[in-house]
Length: 546
Image (cartoon, rainbow, N blue to C red):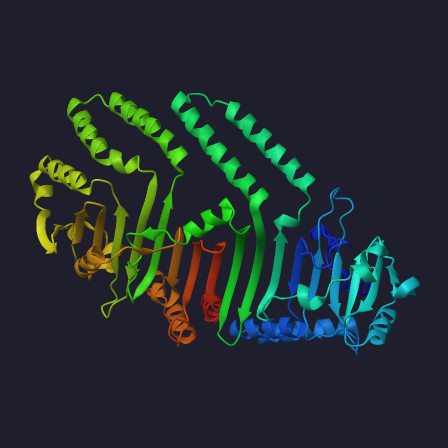
């Protein structure tokens, strides 16, 4: 059975996976037109080197050897003779107006044309040479015809129609395969190259779908809520249509840099130059956060969200908030509690109606005492009013609870810092995390800050004087070595695994970020030593569970 599948697998490797995307060569009247779709895969040698690299880090060298042996057994003693295993494999094309006329062209690097033909013959693939240097290949397990020709030190491969690889339609591999050598896989879609009729069809479907959703009214939904929902749907529709009309390139790339021990996965989206979409994406890269400088040198885990609602959506948010507040107050039958709740809502109302969220936190440590420090900040409107509210609410607390709160206990410039002595009330886990330390809170006109843990006060003071900085819409960053003592404090094998894996500075970092600028990017970065730690940790668990 395996022998019969080898020829089919070889042909599939040669043609790629055409169903993964609709693609076709560039139009005859514009050979230099950018293809709608480009996919590039690292060279076979680099793929194997990366596989061995990651397997070795994970302590699975034997698995890598077995896999390499399996490949050799499938291709025979001469291996992939004729294929240039030192150059990347690619795929290019464009989307046809009718979709059914969309095809795919695969670029396979070739070192020796005759050797490739011999390889196919050894694998029992039937090859016939036709007109104009085009070959046809067939194998009983593949139901469609395959055509290929040799040019530019590559085999150009397509299916169904040999005209797709006519000489005057071939693209130069050097201009198509431009991804970095460290990119394991790169796939891109040029939105501008999608036929206009397909774009118009997509827009019509979106507009009709949004219109249908806007007409629907959920049970209990108020007029204000319905208007807000409609505006949100309109905004989503607007952004998606802008992407269809003014989108540039959408790309996905997986990168392994063995020299720098870097791993990354990135999704990127850009707009046409000078389009509104491009300007919006660029503006995201310029946005500032009050807490852009909150990260400490000993950060174990930090995160930030810095987003704002579109103005036309935010205008309709106010009435919905007013309705919610009114309903909540009406449902509270206790007069004293209702009056207290009204004060809370009044103080928070400006912040709730601002339509923006700027919040960040930083967990630092562990210290020499194996304790952590937490500092966090939240943007507010009229922070002084919120602080006054807190002072008034504390007056109504029982005496024992009031005694735990010390207003104006510290100061940072003109900002007063309040101390809350709740450390004795914390459970044992929190005490082990933050120690026997109070919580500190400070209000500025534009934000509220919280500090907790061993160095909570000093961290809070630093945050209060830090200047706003450019910050992405979203960021989450972790130092695995600093977090391991928190989650595996009593597991010596896991602690030892972290110590062994993360000997180099910053080799334990993992970062997920959404950022603007020239393109909107969602990027996950990690150091390769993370793989080593996972391998060591899994090995330790296997040993412990025996």
